[in-house]
Each structure stands twice: as structure tokens, then as C-alpha cells.
Figure 1 (tube, helix red, strand yellow):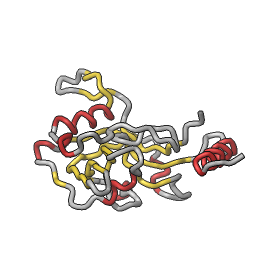
Figure 2: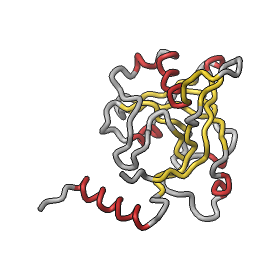
Figure 3: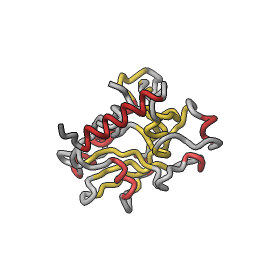
Length: 187
């Protein structure tokens, strides 16, 4: 019997997950709210924050730069959405004693101030301005991966996008998320 690399990874991942009741922490980050966006009248608009962020791609005309790209993709590794969904702070869990560990579960507002696309990388991302330096991602580039050229492109490549275009002042917006450690989904 021959085992492929993908099958071996899945076997190892499942073994690790069963050793820990909560499962392995895949990443820690600001995960966008699954709740509904509020309008000017404070009435729910009926869309999730993730759907709102995806809609902004088209509203701002960025869809023309990424025709045919994926703006929604579930990870085969951890089972969660990866696009327009979160800002990774660190792969895996925060180390013991890290000041953000005490803030897990806290709501965090992220300011979206730019957009970047790199066709060679096959990645597009929202640029985030941080008001809290503790939230700086390990990659050094605060961003939310927005689109991938195809499912084989790794989302972390969005951190390598150079020269994102700033949004005009009146086009900038905020999204609400929660500081969370994301565990793999065990199927």
C-alpha cells in the first residue's frame, strides 16, 4: 500500500488533534465577525462581515483586477474559510506569556486602508492599519488575504504583496472581528 504525502499529513494531523481535546491551534488572529453588519440606521443589513468584505471587492471595482480568482476558499488543512475571513497574527498558538493571550475573545476593529494585488504571486489582500502594535502579525504585514489566483496558491503569500494602493479617505472602512485561536475542524 502506498501513502501519498497528503494522506500522510492528514494522518499526522488527525493523530495530533486526538491527543488534544481542543485540537491543534492552526493560527491565532482577528477573525471577522459572523454577525451582521449594521447600517446607518442601525438596522441589520443581513450580511456577514465576511460577505461584506467580499462585496467591497466588487463595489470598489477591484474585481476587474482579479477576474476568475477565488474570493472564498475553505482550507483543506484546517477546514475553515481563509479568504476575506481573518488577519493572521501568528501561525499556531500564541506563546506562553504573550500579552495577547489574555485578550483572546476580545472584539477588535480593523481599519481597511488599502488594496494590493500581485499577479505573479497570485494573491490579493486588504491592507490593514493597526492602532494597537500588539496586534502586529508575525509576517510584519497587517493584511486580510482577499483573493487567490487559484486554489493551489498559499494564502500566506499575500503578506509579500509590495506597494498596496491606499484607498481614498472616503473609501476606507472598518470591519469587526474577534481575537481567536483557530483550531482545525475534525471531520
